Length: 156
Image (cartoon, rainbow, N blue to C red; front, side, top):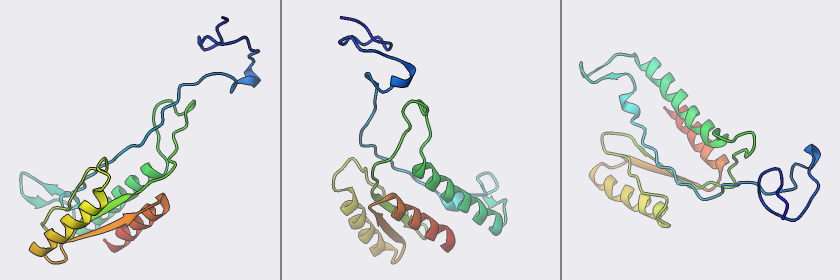
């Protein structure tokens, strides 16, 4: 059996630079989960002096930059094999949980099929300790995620 340009055995075919899609390619696909914790209140906070070393406007600017960076990373992922296997997101869903005080924003693994319900339930219980302390925002698309992040950046 002849071997093609990529070293994969198959029946005889004609390969040329213009016939680049005629063959086997290594493709990675799957469902990926992301859990991220951003402690916005610690931006500009010096752990040694236990004081903020940046003024409020600089802290807000840095938080805004961080929220944009997270958003843009998910909207246009970069990484290895970008020229041969341009990474692209087919769909996205999730929950953004925000703590408005000292209570922690809840997390749950998206590998659990009920993670969104779990986050909602945890948030309800946490809000019993600190009413209005946690808010959740669900999304079913990248555009909904981008809107949530832009709304948060404007609100903060």
